[in-house]
Image 1 (cartoon, one colour):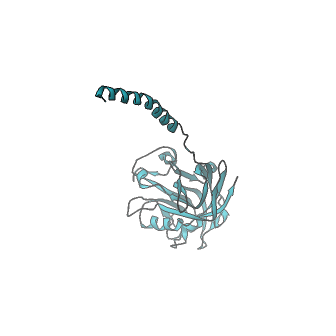
Image 2: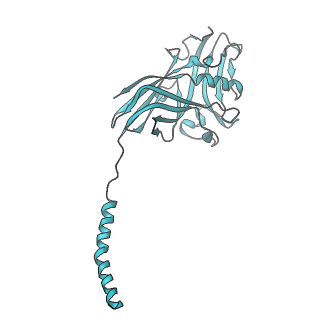
Image 3: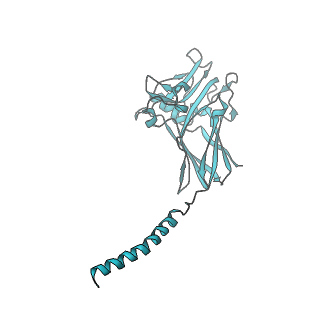
Length: 258
């Protein structure tokens, strides 16, 4: 067969096969992707003092040392939230929340999660080092929220203010707990294990209620009295001791599905 004849046959074969190849390519490209089934999880924080609902300004409480106190301000950052099991981690995107006892709308948030069963709720109490080094920001991280140290270029992870007759600082209590550098880091990794699976169902909302017990600030790991330490407003060893204590103030109170 001459080369001209061979070229003609090859051209004919290409003309016949090319449309078939194109049709196959288009048919594969049009196959819809399988979309994961999702539901939502709502995380609700309820502040208490040893199980008693926290009330600002007027209510009087006592810590484990019998020291009386009132609370006028209680705020803390929750960030890097995820639901986890042995094989999967469902993290919230752009996960930064400031809970404020004076603002009920700040005490809960929700996000979408792939359908499944999870055993751990994981989050940071505080703001990660990347955002601490990013300067003043917006939203929950806006410095106007009164949780940012301009002089120290970092965030206050938790803030607790009030009064106590046991305080030697004109009856004031002020705990502004911050510090993100290695030697001063107070950011706490919190992992709450659910006694029963946290079930996420397509199109439904799962509600996790978390109790935040403020009484843990004086106990659990280290005993810290108001009389000896009524004020802590700078990073350092006392802030780290208090943070180690309050890392234990969270517990899952209930899980429900709507």
